[in-house]
Picture (cartoon, rainbow, N blue to C red):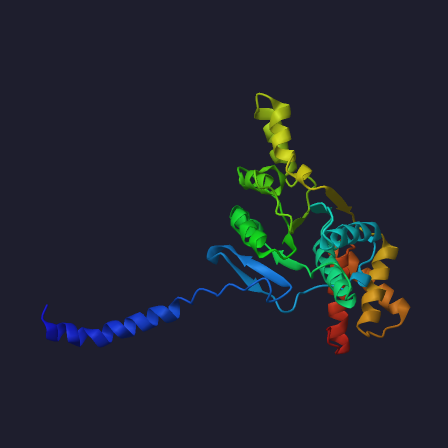
Length: 295
């Protein structure tokens, strides 16, 4: 091809290159752990995304889980102070505040540290890793280890199905690997399953393995890596009403108590359950009808 033809094609090729750059967004810059108090791990880019405003519920508004709240808060305080603390598995009923408790405890401990100038503790970073990104966990832990900042590593709705062998890598990095869990990292996970595996998955191992006890042990031993098991169960009506009334008071939603309870009860019946999530959904509906904003 002659030089003149190449020169004629140059503007076209340049326009194509510019168009392709627009279609492919630039790789996000990784945040430093000193940039914020909450982050999301982006495994595909090996980077951290800083979260300026975390979606959370105030610790004081969490109802019906007093024992679980006290245990997790105490464990997190010890970790922030540099004392031994356990990984925690929050398991049980949907919508009963498992992930809300993790985020509320993180905020509460950081407020306590901020209010006490003499506290021998550094503000905690909350780092969320998505369940599908668990294979990248060793890379993330190395990043957190070198930072030195105390971090709560959080995985919401952690569970495993079928032939998923990802849980084996998780077992190793939690406690069983050569390096183990970094001293400045604690792992909190939520799940609807106590052993993180579907029951039929465990039963299948029991029925097909030559040594059934060994096969089952392999499946359930992942949950043993969590020193704390905190169970969450469906709430009764009084606790549900306490959630509703606490939210309504917190957000200035004025409604006669009898009407508030009657409406919220009907709301729970139409959804077939009572939980913190159902209570919050009713509050959102109520605020919309009253023309109020929820901060």
